Length: 98
Image (cartoon, rainbow, N blue to C red):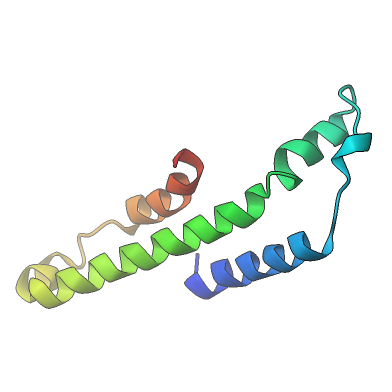
């Protein structure tokens, strides 16, 4: 996903978490909706996921540019062989693991 789209989503969730207040004292333990709100919204999971994904995306971009500058011949030769899927996967998996 494009870095600017990830940053946009992080910004939107930052605004939403600042504006929308949910009172957790009136929640029921038996309600599925209340459990979902508690597990996702009150922990600010979407916000932290997008912020972490953005950070790891910037780190991966920096590492790629570092390799292009320090090892230009290797980078140019292996550029067409490098799989981007693992890098993108790591970018979205790491925030959930860390």
